Image 1: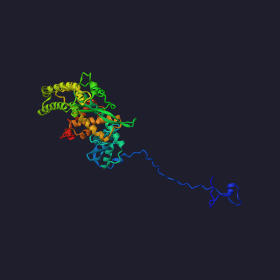
Image 2: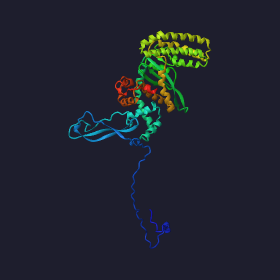
Image 3: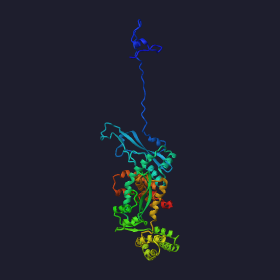
Image 4: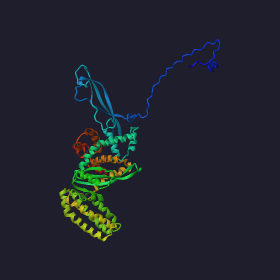
Length: 483
């Protein structure tokens, strides 16, 4: 036990030796004073997120009140409400949306009522992201900024901060984006099916850099595109970056495609469909022409003759367009005027191949054209077919513009996600649909189609959706704006 020390705080030597001094009373130990200490435990803030700090400073511009349905509210009194916050977007402004659900309690507690109906509140509607903050309008803007205006996520976050939505992390935006792609993927699958169930497709492929985590660099992979010409539908697809002709053949086989497939002169198409009885390849006159443009530096006379003949074929097509010929009238015009020209060109190519070395520019151009000429002459048998594959190449152009801004895709899954949104945006462009209005609508609707059949989901595809939303059709076609 502790004993009180002398006043001078010096210890007593006799106490230490256990000796009692005569006349000195033994000291009694005093009870130490008890001190009560009170404190408030402060919880650790590590790992605790404050998501509302990102948007609570945004103005509240919209309130949606959702009342309970199927009940007599005169039997209830309002006892509170539950408020769910969303963040919306309109051009130039981010804002909050309050989804208010009034809560009602039974006025007469003795009144008989169904079990669990003493307190009622409307169910929460389905949002694009479960328990997520972004409204469909905000998710649409994120997609448009990245793939229509080619703005990477980090630049979007900077723009959001300038407009009042501060503190948003890129990881959060990526999470929103991936969930939106999952939401739209059933719609994308329906679109791919519609494309390959048509009878005339143009297709093309383009490179896209994809990060290889094992090699710590970006690999050059290939992205594919197919366009249903008559229906004006576009579908991008990706198969681990492969450029093999089997990538397109797998799709045609899966959907039992029968008809014309127009493409450039890449040998993968010929190898894939060489023995096909249902797929008829048609090549591109523009690609043939490019080789002869190069020949002018080596053999201007021969090159100019061939280029002039191509110009005659295009002149016939332009006259058909000017006179407004339908497909049958165009076919008849081609049989009468284009066929003699194309047969003359074929005989001329046979002569050129013999006279020029295969290693010369002239020999290479002649061989390229001649080996594809029979397929090229299929345009004479169907007035729907076009002379070139330019429409398909135009669909690839946004991919080229985009990769100059976001530089690369992080992995194969990112390219798959890009195919989903690029397919929908390209189809909107082909049907002159305002993509913002379209995405706002379908992103808000898709949560209610989670168990719907592909036939029902297909009603949300742009070319069908616009029948019920004429306000979304651009008065100035989007294709003209792009030019």
